[in-house]
Structures are given as structure tokens and as C-alpha cells.
Length: 117
Image 1: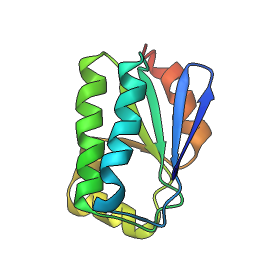
Image 2: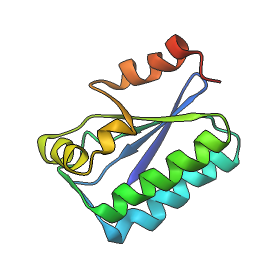
Image 3: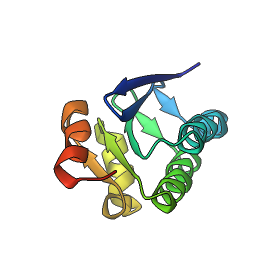
Image 4: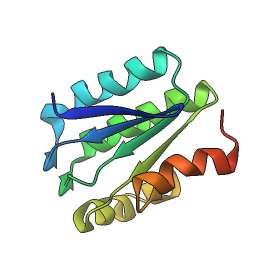
């Protein structure tokens, strides 16, 4: 629906095609991510470049997903913060929890640099 899935090697990139990522889409978003994790994905990038705003429920879906993927010895990385989204991550101090990148390529390539399986 609003989430575009792309594979770049062994990294799954999920693009969030929403201007406003809110409670209305958070459950479907979480299901999309967890489906990939349950299928064995351990390298996940979420592209938020289309999002001008995300609410706390959507942010919560990212936190739940990060917890699940790290239990499976994987990692989730973020890319494409617009100013309001960047502010949300700073305000909630989530920038300490999530690794964020300016470009999708940087995020994907970071898995090879860190050796995350």
C-alpha cells in the first residue's frame, strides 16, 4: 500500500510513502516490517524521506521492530529525515537508539562496514 519494499543484496529497504506517518498507518507498517523479520531478514533499512511528519505511534512501531530484529541478531537503520522528523527524533532522544543516514546507499553500505549479519 504505502510501503515500497526493495532488496539491495541481502538488505531489505522499506520506503515509507507517506507524507504524514501516523496512528492510522502504524499497525500496517509494523506488520510489514515484522513479516520481513519473521522471514529471516536481519538487515533492514527504513527510508523516511517522503515523511514530513511522524507521530509517536509510528515511532513506537519502529522501536518494536528494532527490538525484534536485534533479538534476531540483526539491525534496523533509518534514512531520509526531513526537518520535522529530525526534530521528533531529537526531542524523543531516539537518535541515540537508531542509526540514521543521509542516503539510502550510505545506510545499505553501512551493513558491510559493520559486518552485521
